[in-house]
Length: 86
Image (cartoon, rainbow, N blue to C red; front, side, top):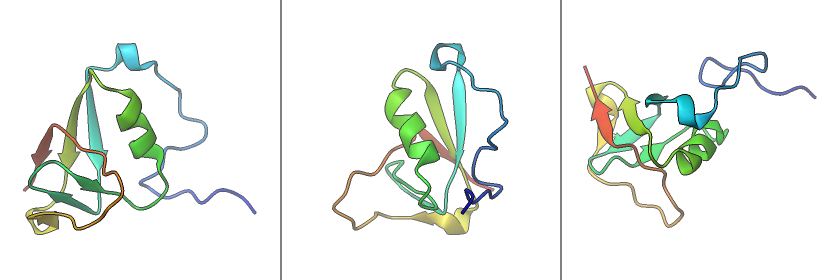
């Protein structure tokens, strides 16, 4: 069975860029909380990148309706530095 490709996941043929060449990472999400916590779609692509890109500015991009006060989960949530909404 092949990998599931959606608009949220990077395409297998996309050029990889070293983190040291990144200034800003714009991150999609299903929801974000007021502290920059992010709920993704479960693929883990962006979570893996966010864990490794400590010195890069990270920005969550979503609609206002996707912002919640706080996530109630026990596992580690990857956070973004800022969240931009409509």
